[in-house]
Length: 555
Image (cartoon, rainbow, N blue to C red; front, top):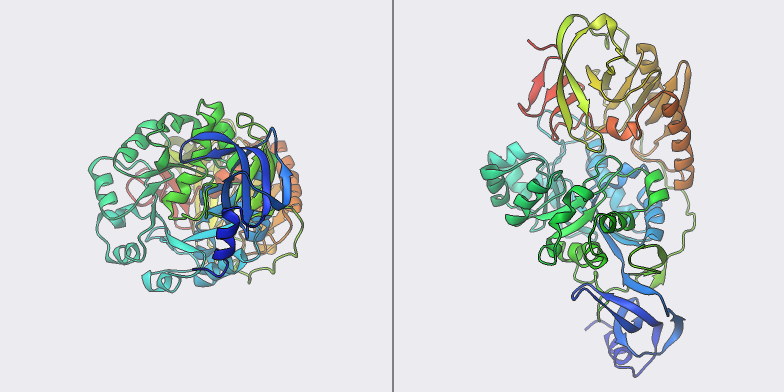
């Protein structure tokens, strides 16, 4: 029996006062999906129960609604451009009290040291950050990033505080072929996240048979329905560019809600600051026709059950007092947030120390990124609101690139780890009329990636990122606006307000360039070879369907 259990038992029975009592509230129960009026009592950060209680501190919540703290089922904190402490400070006022994070971005850059950095950072966070171990470092066998993590490298983390299981398994071909190294990783934990965009039929059967349990990559209702019927947990995703909630919301019913959760996956901080986090997902789901009770269940008890976090997800006796106070379930605006019984108040913390330098490359020469020849080429086509791409074909003359009339621009990837490799391809969909952008974020190897309207501007953008030892740069002419990412070239040690301010300045430049919204988020996924259909790496063009490097010009 825990040392404080006798005190808790007495307080639960009403024989001694609670620490805090929320009086006259309307309290949501995700087990039953209903609301009941009453008092909610808390002691030592634990829910004592509901009923009639007295406490050392009491709050009158008449006319207000109380729900469990919100849980993000799958997120990459690094994609917020913030350190874990700053990320937590940003999302906590949105009602989030727990996130399930996969640190595979920094793991691809720095391996074990990157995971240790993220684990250490959770200790000072305003919310509870739980991690899934990166299963695919590198993301695919041909990729060469900053590290290779095999099962023995990951085994040291099993059982560590803050580690729940194995993160998204992206190497679908390796799973299906029975790769021994992947089998050893899958054996590390009973909790295993999947990543299987477009997988169906017998191949999906084999993927599930190997032990994968969830998917956050569904973009169509039919895909999600097949995976749900075969027993997968489905994470409905809403990130900066991956927006799937509206298409998938018919999947969620009272019968299926226990297998459905929300995921934000990859979100920039400006979106989080202005539109919210999991609370944003709930509002979108309600707007798409889902009952508020089902949406709240998806953000609380469902992810808690999926990850075996039976100490949270509902405001019942013995669970953590993670809770939110809201005015109205339909509008879903967060008033106050409590994590472990303590109210979360946003206050600036000491800035994190930067991660050791990780950019070890030089600016490529103009000749290196030139395109010579004429003929039919493979062109990466951006898909609005998605991270999948199209495999397009265009007749081009290399001397006439960029072709702004047809919106065909160069895209360049420079290896950041000192190999000297540099790949050049073509992309359609950015709509730039001038300038260039570059970043040290390119999933998952996180080489430097750039696209733009002229070679000079592309090279200046790449140079700006290298000089900053990682960052995001928007260039027009000879002028560059840069957000330094001094933590592994992925995250900034600035406070989130300052990061958003700098992002705003960069956005002003990209809008003047004539570009689409969120161009950096689209750019960051163009090198991710485990998502269909066509990609660019430091080796050149990659066909995800054939799972091999292919020439730019169609032979």
